[in-house]
Image (tube, rainbow, N blue to C red; front, side):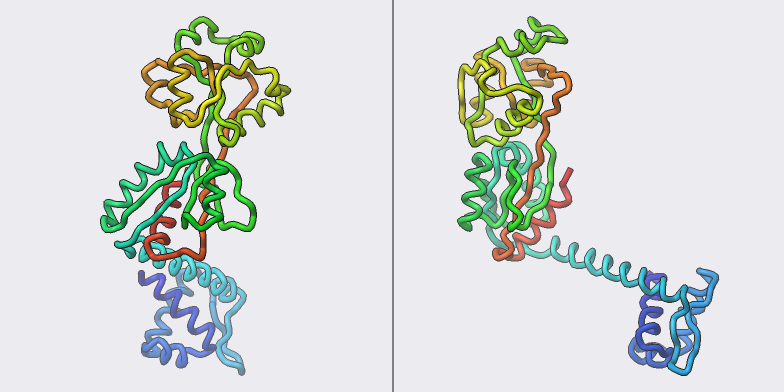
Amino acid sequence: MSYLHSLSVFSTVAEEKSFSAAAKKLGLTQPTVSFHIDNLEKKFGCPLFTRTAKGVLPTIYGEKLYTSTQKIHRIATETENHIKTLVAGNAGEINIGASTIPGEYILPDIITEFLKLHSGIKFSITTGDSTTILSAFHQGKFPIAIVGSKPDDSLTSKTIWRDKIILACHSEIAAKLGSSPTISEILALPFILREASSGTRTTALTTLVKHGFTLDKLNIALQVSGNQALKTAILGQAGIGFISTWAIQQELADGRLSSIPLPGVELERTFYIVRDTTLTPTCVESFWQFLNLYSF
């Protein structure tokens, strides 16, 4: 901390253009101020100030150090405020809107960790497709929402997580297809799709169109609402479907479900965290800061 303190003394001298004025402002003796400046000049191996008729002015080296010091002070202040915000806010209620993947598979674990630090805060999570959640957010129902569709630029938002979508099938179907199925073999299988407003469906179909596949080429046998219904249908061998790996981690691990390779096709999407800046009680600000620690 002594180094940061010396930088603070240096900045004050640069701003006051006087060792004595800086000493008075900081509540230090002038020899103490000189001691800090001498140490910095020894550390950097160059003069930081020059005496002129207008007072003590930074040299070219001093000007560079002053600019950098302001950045350091700003970062230190932001970090201090960040930590204080995380520590504060031990009461209140936070209603979060989330699309199904973050709402069901990501947020619960993060909230559990947050509650270890802020046990007095109560949470509620409302899940739905991205379109529904964003609509509710616009109506002021949530101070924070997490969705798989990019919010419009008028909202305060940022990317927070990546999501990988695969074409999943029952392991018995995968065994019949082999490791390198042809596009014709894949398209011959019955498809199960999420509802039209689903972010998973939108991402998958938009990507397929870019690779020359359209909806009319798919043999759609079933349309379902929600990841659980989709997973259940795939496990029951009703067909194959596009689904987030978050939703089927266990099934992939134990071998009940497999991923059908689509050469040259990468199905990924981004989750966005959206914030209503007019609804900022301390507990919401604390959780917003905490969420950002878990971005990946």
